[in-house]
Image (cartoon, rainbow, N blue to C red; front, top):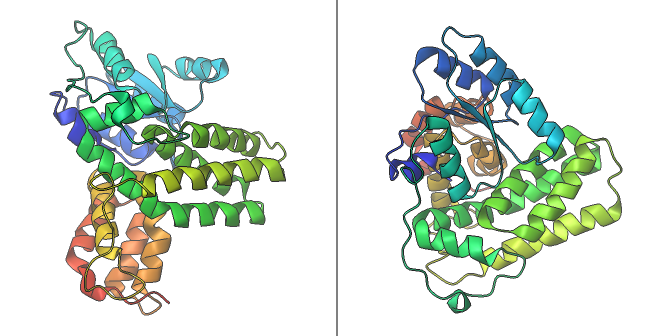
Length: 322
């Protein structure tokens, strides 16, 4: 989700960072009314970033934790690190705005969700495994963002699940846990309840060094496949075809995926990392220096530089996947 797009409609100016180190650097350079701190980030986690912001001169903006972990122990860890509030993901708009008003000491409703009249719930297409109320809220309040999120989820799903299987088979619990965490968050944001629950069980087993048995894996992959099948099967305009007329065989979706990657880089979203396998295939083994630099910049989370490189490349440098 693009916070810059959504929150701009609420009169909130948003600065995005890709990791904890960037968050600390931004806090050191500018004045912020409030910080929403993701707990699980690359390079530096949210707890460490919070402590370092608190150590800065005047480092007292309210900091609200964002985490997929709803356990009481996690809440205690966040508050002990110096945070002022605690929200669990996936976020509900009303909960988020209520917390913003509380932390900024604004009258309730000063930052709020503007609703349009909703169609009757029964008029929507059945989406088994999904929270129908959450889906309707997205479609009512942010239909364009909903479509972009669905596009991104469907496009990235094959590479992400392949990477999860590879990590699990290799016993790389850290890599698998990180990928499952991302898929869980993306699915949860779209209202995929069954996928979120299955991913939660698998992630907890991976993080806590518990057994990852066949049933746990089977449930996760089955729920993930069911969720993407539902989303991919939505009729236009909910999901548009990703193919581009005249593009080379085997890489027909690349124009759409490049636009998705550009949007992620523009907003500093670390889900840009999930596009790396696809980029490597489409660049081919004879990638130009600029193509190799683009891959390096994304891996290094240098998203501003990667955005500039991507825009300079164009479609012409992409080879057919090998």
